[in-house]
Figure 1 (tube, rainbow, N blue to C red):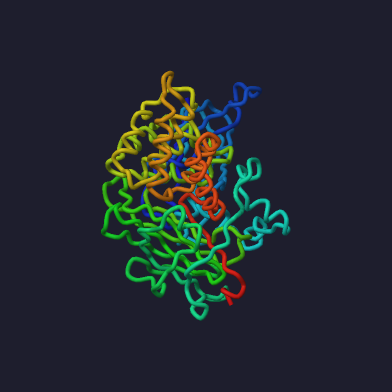
Figure 2: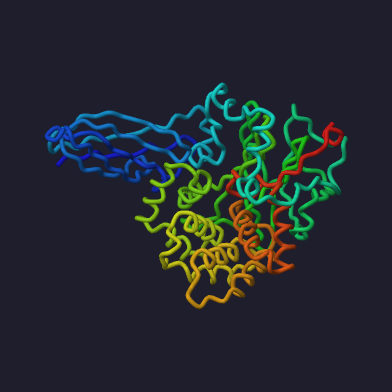
Length: 442
């Protein structure tokens, strides 16, 4: 038997090794059986030394590395009997300072050449409008998007599109579903302060380092990004404790180019232990995500991360969202009862109650009391806006199931739907976008 020893070299801009997230596909034909195709698939690390071993019979093979971003790297090798052939992939790094974004696919196509990157944004006027509406809304409908009103930065302070956006860390304790329908009043000047520092800038892109505040989850923090023609509030899931036990930092990427009405701010958490989970949430609709899910199932990362909720409840919620999307709802999972604990132990994190309610809906127990679902949905609503975009969409969908029978639930569904119309569904972490009128942006 022969072996390929496969790894991805460390991605430029990421100093850490990432054990899960890159998929290697080995396909070809053994020399002794040229009519029988061979296919192998494994997860490979991004590492300087560690490799994943793929056993094959002598023959000629194509080896591909599939990144969460959708990038595919390829090598072709012939292997002899008993031979071990090393395969080392090196990811392209035109902008090394966007290493985490390139890996996680949190910003689609951001590292493509300019002519290619522009094509995904090129919609006609009707197509752009249609593509900005979530599929759920196209099918079921929702209340009309809310025109932002209320307090905002003064016209003289507005940032024009040709200038750098202003970014600040803000604490909005009273920012709930009803008040979020209007653009929040930000009394102070938007100043980056010590928690935010512009790290790199090129063309329309600016990358900010986000230092987590010292306060715990009792303080809800957002990054406010004034783009001139819109104000965006980016949810900050702090403190995010990495698998090593330290507090992970984050990066905020702001793209001032035209995004067809979608959000231009994206948050990326620099945590190698959660990279695969967050990458799936960013690209879970792609076929390649199925391969990633298979590897996560084999590694037990979803169960392990939910089980370690006391270390990082935010990562546990991300793992639960992946579990809801990827695992068979008819099968009992070890982590099913842990979601109730996640809701109870972290009442200020709405996502815990959302995943608990959605799991009950997807997999009802024989004697399940519907009141348990309604209680979880109410707790999720009262806790505020979910940190994850998936939480808003799941909460809206779940509330809709009970809206016809309960007036209170119907009112909550309408409030959530209004905010959902301001949210970019392609983002992992919630980004609420408040467009400004031309006069306000002038």
